Length: 141
Image 1 (cartoon, rainbow, N blue to C red):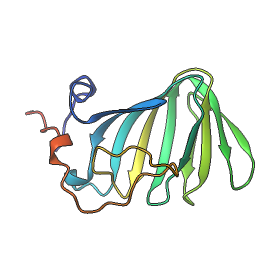
Image 2: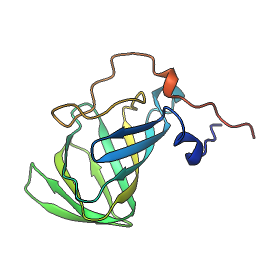
Image 3: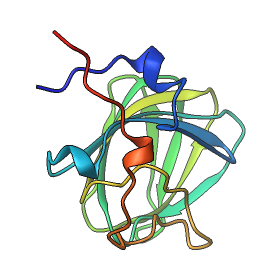
Image 4: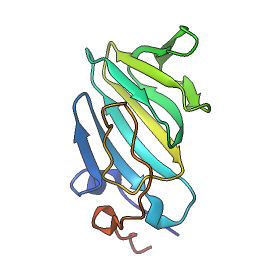
């Protein structure tokens, strides 16, 4: 069993910051769950261009609002608490938060822990590099 506290992750190397967002990676590749699990905040007023070419992602908006534009279809969808979106086709997209958006995210394949978006908006493919510095030990029961 793995048990972690978000407040502890936020003080660790598993808290990753980049332009327009920060992410707390609670489960990573080395946890051998087959996916990674993150709590992410995207900041109001940003325009986040993303294209996960090497990962599928599902996102549940917990708080905040904005829009997501699917660049493949041209459709724009409202984001608010309770809305889930899944990038099941490696969809190229833009998130435009009008309020800070707090969300829970799942990635498959799992990320290793320190990834940030490259110039194309993607996380790089896993190169097999060990990311144990970003892992947090499970809490004793």
